[in-house]
Length: 394
Ligand code: MG
Image (cartoon, rainbow, N blue to C red):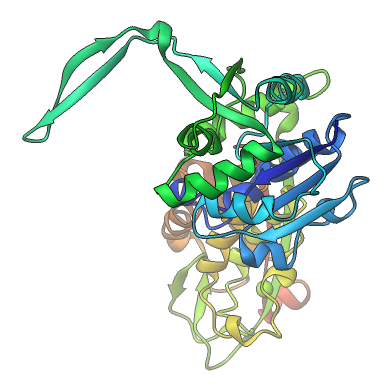
C-alpha cells in the first residue's frame, strides 16, 4: 500500500500573537513544524510527504525539509486550509492508495495513531482520529448577548475531531472536488461527509493537542520536556549568558545609559544611540540562548540601526530568545565609568530595562563602578559594561 502524507502548515497562527509564524516556534529542541514532520519522516508506512507552507516560507524552506530520506514536495498554501490541502493533494503521487493529512500544529500525534488511521481509511475509504467528549456537552442559545443552555446533549455520541485524517485517493479526490464548492470546511472529513462518504472514527490521543493559544504553547513546552530522555529538571534547563560592551566618550553626543539620558558634557559615540548598558545586556540575553550576538542581529553596517533606540534592540532580543523557548529570569550588570556618577540614575535605568524586558524590576540589577583612574576607562575616555543574564524555559 502506497501512502502519501500531506502536512498542513499553510497558516500563520495569528491567535498566538507572536511575530514568528506558529509552526516555526520551538517546542523543546525542535520547531512545531519539525516535530510534526519528523513523525511522518520516520514512519515506515508513509512513502512521500507534501508540505503546504505559507508562500514566503515555501520559497525558502527550513533545511530539515530538504534533507529528508523520503520524497518531499513543498507547496505554497492557499487562502484557506482546504485550499492549501487541495494544492498539496495535486502534488501527491497518482498511484497513492491512501492519503493521510495532518495539521502541523499537532506535533505530539504518535506514529501508532497514524498507523491506525491509515489502516481504517484503507478499509473504509475515510477515517479520522477523534476523542470522545469527556465533559458534559451543552447546546447554547444566545439572547441579548447572554448565553443560556438550550439543552444537554448526550456525550456518548459526541466526538472531537483531531488529525491525522486519512482517505483513499479516490474518496479524497471526490471530497475536494465536490465538497469545496459547498463552502468553508475546517477539516477534510467534513468535505468527505458532504460528498456522501462514511467517515470512520479512530480513537485519538489526549496528548495530540493542537497548539493554538499561548496556553497550548506552554503546555506543549512542558510535554516536550517530559518526553526528553531522562526528563531533565527545570533547574538544569536554566541558561546563563554574559555580555560586554564599551563605547568611547566624545563631545556633541547624548549620554544614554540603560535607556536613561544623563546630563553630561560628553556622550557615548556609536552607530546607534551607543547605549552601552543596553548593548551588554542584549548580548548576555542572546548569549544565554546561544542566539548569536548584537552584531549579527543588528549590524552597524545596516542603516536601519543608525541612531537606533537600543531599548528597542533589547526588546527584540527578548523576542528572539522567546522564539527559542526562553524567558529572561534576571539580569545583573556593572557600569564602569569614571564620570559621571551612576548612583543617582540607577533606579531609573532599572525601571526602563525591566519595562523593556517585561520582567519585574526586582530581577534587574545595575551597579556603578569607577576604574580608580587607571587605564582608558579611568581617564574617562570610555564607558564599559559587563552584564550577565539568566534565562528560564518558557
Ligand atoms: Mg555597543
